[in-house]
Length: 352
Ligand SMILES: NC(=O)c1ccc[n+]([C@@H]2O[C@H](COP(=O)([O-])OP(=O)(O)OC[C@H]3O[C@@H](n4cnc5c(N)ncnc54)[C@H](O)[C@@H]3O)[C@@H](O)[C@H]2O)c1
Image (cartoon, rainbow, N blue to C red; front, side):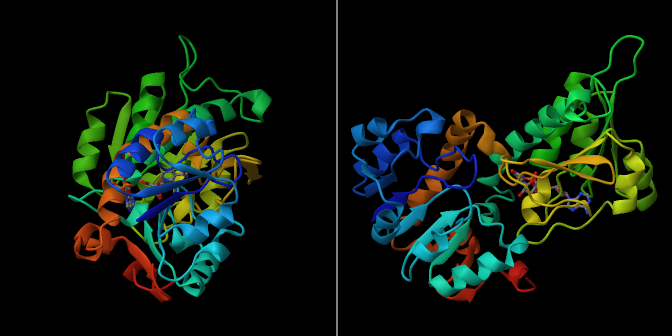
């Protein structure tokens, strides 16, 4: 099997799907591995590190796409990339198609079979999404804390507070991998945190983080009260494969007050806050209702040295399984197929 790992072209995306150690093991398994020139550089892996394990470094991305039976990449195909996909080929990457009908059409037209990292379910969880969500959750607090500083346009608040100065109020929607990581870091900084989830087990876990954390069911009134008092609002809900539900309205965002901050991690699934729109690291923030919004859809792309290693460790076993001829009999992989040779197969996408 020819496995292609392109260099990511989404703005300021530095991650690479597979690190050299993983490529070396694939080569030892008898696969041919093609790596886009410079694909690993931002993660600390020069082309020579891939060549040293037996991978072939390819200069032109079109050549890599034309040759590969299986394309493994990080972000959804971007810009010209969907035009280079072809029938009979497998694509394995983050796709987030529920928020991107135009990409759905391009994938259908290409004839590719596309499997999404974020819809691969195993043992009741999403093993490839999970480490990226944990990174995004921590980044949401690091970035949100900084955006609250006055030179960034924020209201001029030290999130953790100090003696004689109250800490900031953080509200987190969703206590899954991203939300829980945000709650833990915000609490560790000294902020007061309110977290909402539908799942009582998740709320119980959040309650154990510390006395500064309040965990609540998202009744409309409770959510409304908490959001209005929030200095930093973090969106992190997920219904796998589907567009995120809007839990917070434009009016509620306006009530947070000027210089408050929204970081909607769920933006890749359409966002769970009405005022959210997708941005890139090239221009990551915008103002809506006087509130600073951060809507970057590839947040872990800012920390490629950390994120590529974490992503590869969760991804690699699935790449090996997907490289086998009998992969369609693997229930987890079969369930991750979003588009199959011109057909939309993921039920949650049928309304897109
Ligand atoms: N922007 C980025 O760069 C980036 C990076 C990683 C993950 N994400 C996104 O972050 C989101 C969260 O991912 P995750 O891995 O933490 O998911 P997860 O499945 O671990 O957690 C989602 C949580 O949302 C809860 N939930 C669902 N509907 C809810 C509702 N109506 N009210 C309250 N809670 C609700 C679920 O019970 C669950 O606990 C996803 O959209 C994912 O794609 C974005």
